[in-house]
Length: 116
Image 1 (cartoon, rainbow, N blue to C red):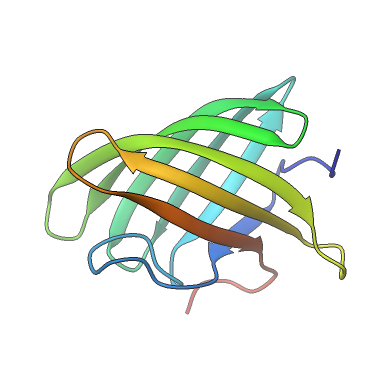
Image 2: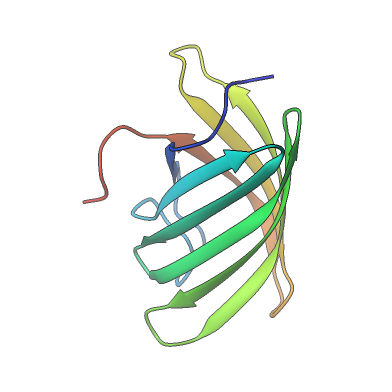
């Protein structure tokens, strides 16, 4: 099992659809005893939260966010944690909105710099 997500900052490697999470979004993860949670913001997202569980390399969580235009939305995500050759962590995510139509896949990776 890759190391803990606790205290790590991750960012998407590519932009999603307009008005969604993008490369300027930063996720700060926390982990303890099989529980995971994170705060995220940046780009079109003013504030977001996620909460869920981790079993081995698998994450299962719900997320909710407030966008720049004042709308809120939420959904469900399952992610697989992997370690990159350089030691950083990557999450490969399969997500689906529960508050609006839409689903997809995305990749977020551990970063060391802050959002621009």
